[in-house]
Structures are given as structure tokens and as C-alpha cells.
Length: 491
Image (cartoon, one colour):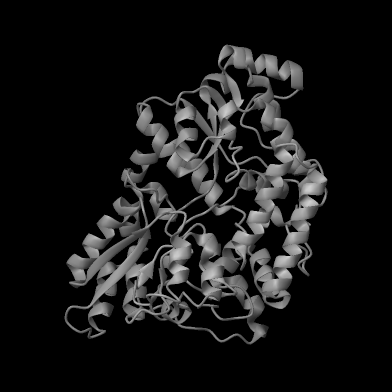
């Protein structure tokens, strides 16, 4: 049974977010929703190959895949297997990671035959849909995909826009906290910290606890720094986003009034300003790889990272050595009860061009690439940057060898309980305004209140320009997909 194209959530998301059983769906029988048949194909790649051959394609048919530079290693095992089993060649085209979404969007007005399949950053899907660049795959997914294909993906909120399906997630980009084991498991440090703060030195559960620990370990004269959390302009917005949610607020009201400049937003920004005093000096200028290199030297106590961070660190340390411990992102406290706020950031999706001459074949490739064994062969590649995203991945020996069991345990938990990114039309405009205001406050140019008031005004203007009714439909859908464990803490 499937609930696509309904006025309520797609079935697999609905069950995961509400915690209901299959039997519980009987409670919703009065909605009058027709039951759709299960997808015709199971988890066996041979069934997809058979379906492709049934399409009676002309000789020489091929597909072009536009991908972000750097993921070639992830694509190679899938493409080789697909071509070997179907006889259909996959031609690769690449674009810079930071401009691939723009490249896909330009396809609408330039070379419409440039590609059949693309891999955009997940946050850009709403804008690409609104631009007319992406094929609605809802009917293909209903026709072909077995329920297990999608239900066993741990995060799929970004696969949908306004309740329609646009492509499979292929990268588990959940944020994870890294801590220097040498210090967090040091008995003398533990006693000093507990004597000062009145609670144990352990994996922090709240941002207040993390900030206290970074302050405790910030000793520049000894060559030790509290953290190297990103403070450069392109990264600060995500830390603020996590802290903001942990303070108990949604970014928008139900009628789309911005809430980013409320008490939760001000408190988050003030805490970031204060904690900046306990970061390594280069945190304010470091890019991605510079941050990883710095943290690999074990000069900093804490860092925010993801799967790519872990693969880099493991390449710089012996696999038998365990220099770091891991934790979910810190959260907040509601009525004296702590809650965590994991976050899914960035990610990549397989999508199909709205102008492909072979959209059904292109969809079947994306389905093929998403199967458990094939996607595992992709994720396990050390040179690529796709991270685990299916339940089966966490039991795969090659993936365990690549990431390590300690990391994967926290990563899986974070994936299953992550708040979504801001999957709205105009994402870049909204976040550009927020990013600029946050960084003006971090530099001391504006007060936290004034900076976020300016951002909130820009958010209102962006919403009005795009269309409030259209935006309200997606926000209502996106808000409903927030994980249950955090919904009770947000207002």
C-alpha cells in the first residue's frame, strides 16, 4: 500500500515519523484514500534489468549522468554493473560541487539534452522543481519500487517536494560531533571539570554542556584549543540552525511569519559569539579540508563533522588507533528533560531531467543505484564522499572497515532522528540573508537582535516575492516531517 499523491504523508515517511505500525493505518480508513498496489519490483537487480529490457529501447540507447566532481569513485561500481547487465552505456559529465545545482537549473533554458540523470545537492530540489528542471517521479516510483527500497532509507525527507517524489537520496549527510579521546576520558580532567561544574565530563547532551567543555579545554599556551567549529562565513549558518532548534523553535510560524529573530534565535547567536573565544584561531578562515587537517593533529577538543570527516581522519591515523569519540549533536532542555537535535545537512539525490528522452529508463537506473548491495558498493569507496544512508549499510563489512563501528553507531542514530534542512523554494536566498546577518553579529558589526531582525525582514520579502500560498503548502508538509522526538520541544 502507498500513499503517494495523497493529502497526507507518503506511507513510509508517515510510519517512520509517527511510530505507527502497519496495522495502525486502519485508523485512517475513513479518509477514503484508495490503496495503491505495491511496486512491481523487489530488491533484486535482475528484476530491474528485466524491466529495462521490456522497454524495447532502440539500439545504442545511452544515458548521460551529470554529477558533482569528486564522487566518481562512488559512481564507478554502480555504472559498471549497470552497463554490464543491461548493455546500456552511462556517459558521465561533471560540474563543480558548488555550482552543480545552478548547472542543472540552466539546462531549462540552454542545452535541454545535456543530461538524463543528475545528482544535485538535496537542499536545491525545491528550486529545481519550481524551475521546471526535474521530472516528477511519483508514478514511476509507484509502478516499480518495492516498499523496502525506500522504507529502509534512513533519511528521505528531502526526496519529496509538496508531497511528490523527485529522486532517491544517495548520501547520508548527518552531522556528528567529534571529541578528543585523550581529554574527555582523562580521569584528572574529569575530576577538575566535575569539581567546577557539578556534573560529569562526558559526551555533552546540550549546547550549554558543550560550550562549558570547550571553555574548560581552551588552553592556547599549552597548544590545546576548545574546538575548531567552523566560524568562516560559509559554514556558520548551520551551527546556528542547530542551536536555534535546540532552543525550542521552528524557523517559521504556520502562516510563514519568520521566527528566526525570536528568543531562541538571539540566544543561539549570543552563545556562538561567546563560544568563538574558545575556538582555534584558524576556525575563522579555514575551509573544509583545512578544518579536517587541523583536527587530525589533535590540537582541538571538539569539532563538528560528518562521514567525510571520519574518512579523512581514519586515513591519517591507524585503524587500530581510536583517537576520537563520537556523539550526536547536542540539543536542549524542555521542562528539565534533555533532548538532542541531530541535523541532516547537504546530501545528494539521484534525479531525472524533465527533458530526458528516456525518463522511465533514467528512473530505473536511479532505482538500480539505490538497491542495498549496489548502494553499499558505492558508499564503501574511500575516495568518494557518499556516506551510509540505508539500514543495510551499517552491517556491511566494507563500510564498517571504511568508517569504523563507533562512528557508524552514532551516524545511524543521527540519520534516523535528524531534523531536515530548510527544503523550501528560495533556499539560497533565505540562507544567504541568514548567513550574512549571523556573520555581521559574529564580527561585532551588529547586535544579535538587530542582525536577525534584518534577516527576518528579508525572509518576509522573499516569501512575498515567491508567493505565500505556494510556500505555505511546502512548509506545512516539511514541518510535518520533523522527527517526533523533537516536535514536542518546538513551538
